[in-house]
Length: 149
Image (cartoon, rainbow, N blue to C red):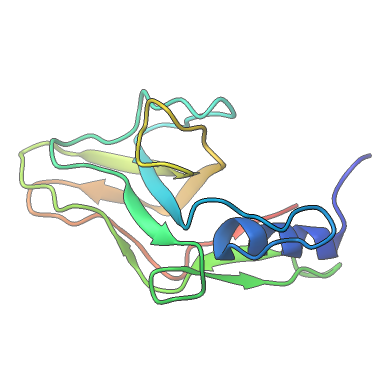
């Protein structure tokens, strides 16, 4: 079975979420932002955007590729704990001022705000899911995490 070492999983998450180069394979890490998207259904490995959003004011939200208050905390993985990345602060999406209602069940992490032109980097289930309705601000909390392995 192929896989990544615990050390590489940690270094990879540092590169993606904190913009830290991995000296042995890359010194340049590109953009300074990651864009968070919410979906009402699983976007799948293809990163489908068909279920992204759900109300008129919805847009992806930028987060810093750093450990700043709008960035990410990355924890190291070991054989008993998996490397993971969690938001340093809550990630609030635009408030829904329309009468649209629904439930966000999945998230994506993207390299761009452009849903038509960017490939998903990560995607997964939100637990608990996020209900949206009029005057609700959807929020991903600091207890959410993206885990390798």
